[in-house]
Image (cartoon, rainbow over the protein chains, first blue to last red):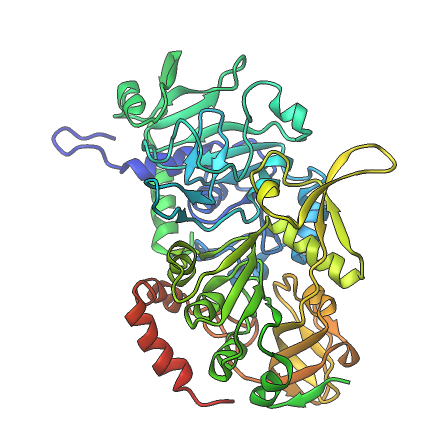
Length: 258
Length: 271
């Protein structure tokens, strides 16, 4: 869809959101965090996976919002849900036993083993830490969902060599970490950024660049990563967003029914 | 039986200096009007408990009434940071704020244990996170049947729970529906409870999925229409998303916040 002389017909954020939605193609159920994950999950329902069951930590199971919710507790989530349950029930009966296929999380900081920090960021010595919102549902979503997808913008501030705080566990310190910790889910299987997709290498569980989006390069992704990012032997290019994907995404973000 | 009081009398009778107070409502049914009455009354040195501090605790923290915050997610939902909360944690303004933080699953279970009269709850949580190391109300516990190591979280038993509901009847029986969050657990875990309601009705009509709290399990009910604004009460109001967005700029600096507090809360009429 690139027209000569006009540049691409999409933004880097749109590439991230479209690819995040595509990553939900095979899932039955998704535990949805607010922000980018919610955009991706709602887009998936309009494109790659119309039957996807959205689970929100506010207690809405099977929500079908007609527009992008502003918060995880918007009234429309309850009004359109298959079931509305209390918060203790949601975490204890629905998340903890492993009933949810995919957990979709954002991150302020992410390390090479896809561990997540959403709690605090250290600044200069003697200066106070920057306070972030904290854990929310993420530690147990990361532990108990069948697998975890992470979506965040690709910057050196976000993809860091060492987390300032471990809020939610991805692959710990490498292979075997999740088993030792007794974490039932498979952990992060893909990290979707605005430059491409990182996946844990099968032998090291270290995030490796497997895909770049149209127009992005592996060198660009490496430069925007705070550790020495490895690249797969063959780095694929994600398919260009289709007109239908872009139309659905833009309608969703414009607040219109879609 | 719950007493039906004015908001002013209910807050004066139930919320005291130094209390541990849980104002609950997960995005929906957040008891803002009661919090504003607490600010007008000036009850201070509070320990506030809440899963998502939201704007309601940002306002109480900025007003200088809070000594300690117990929580699991402290952001402005869908918008960004809570600036008054951050200013208190990062800079100690207007006073230092002690924090005790959990995950949502942990907080939900702490309330459930409190409601059940148990000293702690058990969950498969916190594994590998940095939270357990710095939160004294999380500890490992071994299952006596399987040997599995699990997380124990201490029960939370607030002095007062404050929640907002759609309806109560004249005997103080309370009914709320939609996203019901953790309010039932918070009320049953607390020593005293205040429920503000959209309306007091002659008879409660059963609603699908509603939570009913018998009047004898509630200390006081106050009729406060719109008492959840800028959050909402399903069937009565919608969430004021613009208020949440505007709060970001309004609360960013101390002077702007102080002006808002003086005009909209301290200058507001008691209800």
